[in-house]
Image (cartoon, rainbow, N blue to C red; front, side):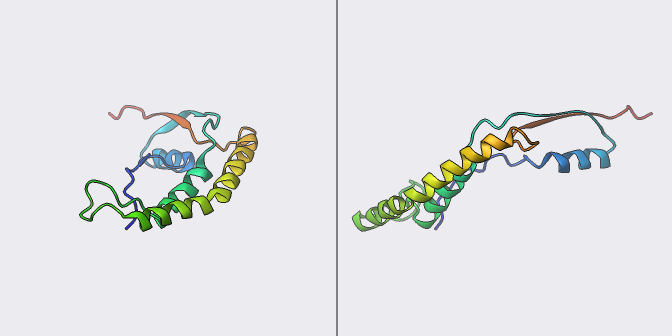
Length: 120
């Protein structure tokens, strides 16, 4: 069973998709801002969640099972220990991408301001 993770950023879509949809609804985008990426952890978080999915904690209070015993906890610890090189590589790649993302329009934050003329 996969670990239960609360959904995050459910409404965040690519800025181009939002701009297109606003146009379809009769809005005109008057301002588009892209913030600098400030949290270079996307790849690290993806790798961490993958490891967590491969060896879930299984000790959440809402699960019907008994808490995991020693062998399962050991297996989880060994998997995460084996995943340390992947986590380190992901951290390095995140930082590398972050250096170049500021020079492009790539960003994990944006703001669109749109208006629609009043209908008669």
